[in-house]
Length: 308
Image 1 (cartoon, helix red, strand yellow):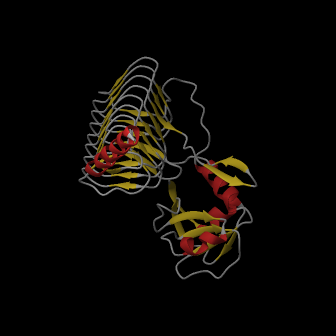
Image 2 (cartoon, one colour; image 1 turned 180 degrees about the horizontal axis):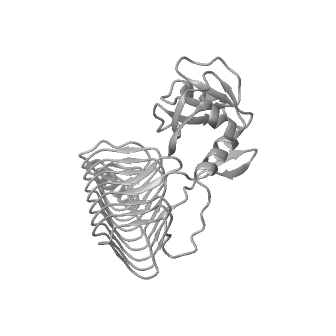
Image 3 (cartoon, one colour; image 1 turned 135 degrees about the vertical axis):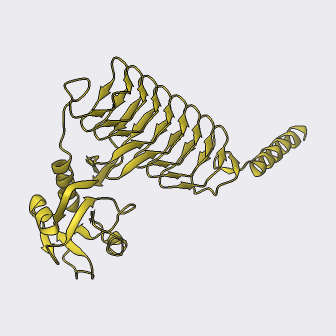
């Protein structure tokens, strides 16, 4: 998430009651998770196991629960509960806004877009020219819909991320401050659900097409001209390349990468990164020619046992 303006580390520390270790004038322009941080971002870490990775990341500022030496080019914000401080900032910059009207007056909708009855559009959402949103769809706050997009009935675009912070066997909801960005000429079938990012964006690339009942998790990036058949589900923060095809009931775990032009046949389960340009099948996913040979061998083994 980008801030509405650049803030100093000292200003942000004051907002979340943290102590600045380092230069309080360090300029910060957004908040992000370790997977997506960029220079100018603030992130948090509360587990010593991840200190080194956090301190070596691109983040300019880190909310942390230990007073340690400040690395060059960084500023640390000390707080005994960094997650709580981070979440407090998230709520400050993305406060809850109840939508009393079907279309929030702060939404920006191109006059050429078609919005059917029963559609709910949240504050600061943007709807591009020639887009067609069909009955009873939900478009969450800050969602960006490009031009010539078709959204079929009862879609939910921009729901909260399924993301929780676990401490002492208790799950605390992480405030979702990311967006969903739907690029031009995407089509989304009925009853699809697309979660916004925790702090970054969930993106559907130009020209991609989703069948009905597809689920896209938080922070997923789908490339250009991808096809996804019914009941595909993609876990959070997974990166899908361009021209990827997924047939019905494909399941993809979180934090993975699938290369350009990959094809995933029906009911394939993906638990590791997959290079592009290959057709995959099975659970776990294997190149289809290998998976088919394995199935044939298992059938032959079963038949030989029956004969004996």
